[in-house]
Image (cartoon, rainbow, N blue to C red; front, side):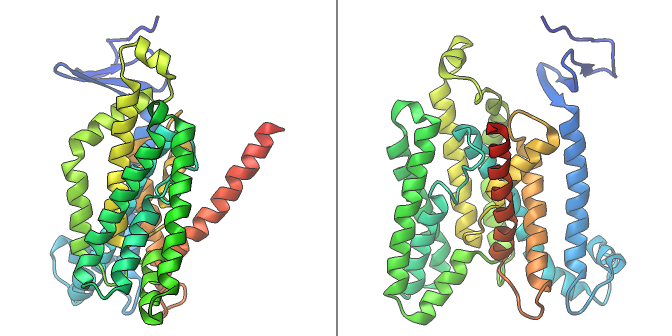
Length: 358
């Protein structure tokens, strides 16, 4: 039996009997906190803030970090226009979109029990991409591209659940159904692009790669608004993820409803993934990499939600910065840089799996 040492720490904070954990009590509510996760989250927050300042500094013209901080504090500098109007909207969008990708990837991978499951693997990205391609190549107004992509992503999610919901949304069936959906939508997207005008096809190709160029506050507001509306659900998800490693019989034995939980977690993940993909395009691999790297940093049995969000934000901010500056004045889409990160990561997973099997 696990015991709790109630004499340690200040009122409301109890050192739990489990190693590396602290029990926080606020009235009738108690929360078990992994101390290493708090430390990792704090470090990632500092790194994210440094990356934001660096992204606001680098460019033409160069703005010294001290001037960036003065502008952000409202002190006023000659660079306020550059910081606030030209760079800050894009940097905020990168951070918000990266965090959303990290959250979506965590939820989907936890349900699938597979480190390779992410929105760009199970078809959500491809559904949004097909809808956006149709919109971009059919002369639809630019303002309608994002809503159309959102509808496409949600339709892909409906098809995914229809194919994978048998046997209680079993992990293996869910992933296989997602791969089938992804291949089907990708093939249809290629057909649309081959029959489209070359200029429209190029616009669709840029969208499919994923770029933050020309985007800012509006897209960030849609993503942040979605996360804010879903905040109570995400608070529940952070607690419900603890049971995803249990088999169905064990979960039912302790009074849980495993099928309803998996559907709720997966549904939340695909909704967030569809929204963020509709706003910034198919930025691949962030949702794939962030949860598993965060899990390894925390040394946890499942991806930690907050750390995955912070790591996703950090990855996309750095990827967008690298895309702007590596070949300046030519800008690389952020999706190109995230793919450069994701490729070696997949090789790492492959080699790691071979070492374990041997």
